[in-house]
Amino acid sequence: MSALRLAEAAVPAPPTLDVERIRQDFPILARRIREHPLVYLDNAATTQKPRQVLDALARYYSDGNANIHRGVYTLSEEATAAYDAARVKVQRFVNARASREIVFTRSSTESINLVAHSFGRRHVGPGDEILITHMEHHSNIVPWQLLCEQVGAQLRVAPIDDSGTLQLDEFERLLGPRTKLVSVVHLSNSLGTINPVREIIAMAKRRDVPVLIDGSQAVYHMPVDVQALDCDFYAFTGHKLYGPTGIGVLWGREEWLERMPPYQGGGDMIRSVTFEKTTYADLPHKFEAGTPHIAGVVGLGAAVDYLVGVGFEAIAPHEADLLAYGTAALSEVKGLRLIGTAKEKASILAFVMKKAHPHDVGTIVDTEGVAVRTGHHCTQPIMDRFGVPATARASVAMYNTREEIDALVRALERVREMFPL
Amino acid sequence: MSDLRELYQEVILDHNRRPHNFGELDGADRHADGYNPLCGDKLAVYVNLDGDRISEVSFLGSGCAISKASASLMTDAVKGKTLGEARVLFEQFLALVTDDAAVVDEALVGKLAVFGGVRDYPTRVKCASLAWHTLRAAVEDRHELVSTE
Ligand SMILES: Cc1ncc(COP(=O)(O)O)c(C=O)c1O
Image 1 (tube, rainbow over the protein chains, first blue to last red):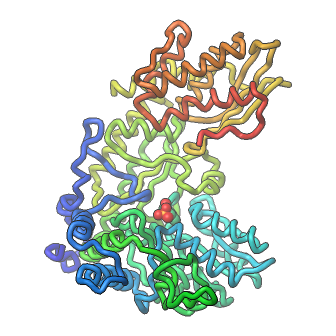
Image 2 (cartoon, rainbow over the protein chains, first blue to last red):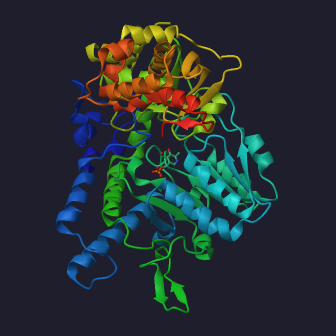
Image 3 (cartoon, each protein chain N blue to C red):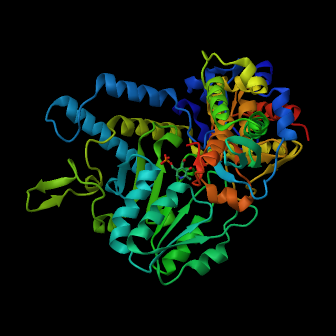
């Protein structure tokens, strides 16, 4: 990857990412689907994995597999070192102050549930409020509903406008004396909206309200610096940033993590256990009960290396070009309406078509090899907000090309033939 | 394009555009709501019974072409049938859309045979069968929402 030296290249438009070279790293992109080259445009659901990640996984299992933190033998020490090294990679990736602020979880979903349990049970009580937005993923809605039910708190929801932009003044109005936590998505998976998280965090900070940011979609499109953001928790998931499934991250400010009780109990998270009293391990192990997904962590470390090696300075303009190109191209398709037209946007092209249900759209474009998502994308409240049962959604990643957008548009013409206006 | 036409046969596209028995039956004896959370399809099925016989049946709702056409053709197919006959038809239909090796009684399934193409699209089986599950709930007088998940 270092051979790419992308950062040194001049960066006028057109973007300078060597996409063909990048594509070589992703074996799955050579696949054919129903006799067409695969056009993978469902990156918001999960991204494909580069060879570097696949190799790291294979190498770990074929060469370095052992349980961590337990053995005194070489293999276990190596596995422990690889595990710890990946934590440091992730720490640097989001610019956390210390690696003990990086907790490995199963997914974004588990990261958010961890906060809902450990922070929520301790710091949220009857009559208190949790503030989210109308564009949250179900994984940033349901854990709070469960918490609210258990402790008698209330969920407050900040509205969005017709473009899918958060109404910041309304959000600020909803920040009240009873607000105990704000939890907001950084980049919406259904609309593509990039939320003004700095302003949101600053508003909350002025009232001493901690903030969780759901960064599931953001971390693979833009650089994230949790110290500069000044939030309190940041959740993301490995499989969207070119890493394996089953591994997620919760970054938490040390002061909070120290005060929060453990999420799950078990091995690896204790200092000493007696039947009378158990004391817990230091951060981050207090929150990592049981044998972790060691291979997943190693794979995530490789994914972070890969992403950093290519560099957001090259990825971001390329993806911005695809979004602009795709927005223009889709706007030309007759009877197509884009859902999510915020000014600040990345990656996502969600749409509905007159006379053709999104589900039919998805099936028809698949026969041309084009993979898009159809459905509510785990954001049913957004569907209700826009008065649609579902949308079709194309979402781009670093390896996509303008030609693939063209293939999508051609496939949508097939839809039009089948379902004329 | 050819295998797509297997799925989206003209009959299906026609029924999607101009569904039969579309609308609410005023004062229906039986009624149930169905929902496919996968794609957001919602439909209601209304039934009037004359003893053991489905004398009138209609549906209302929004959904993809497959689910709408399936509901439309279903209402045509079960109207005038006894509950027992409708149940047999449902079983035949399920076999048709899920089972490659299914031997269906062509005379019995009639026009419903156009849904044979659904077999090759496993995610769409739920679209095709939603109306039938909802019909069964209606005649059994079950009022909870029927979900395909
Ligand atoms: C914005 C957002 N939050 C949370 C999630 C949940 O991620 P996971 O299913 O990996 O926990 C997703 C992915 O589906 C997402 O897009």
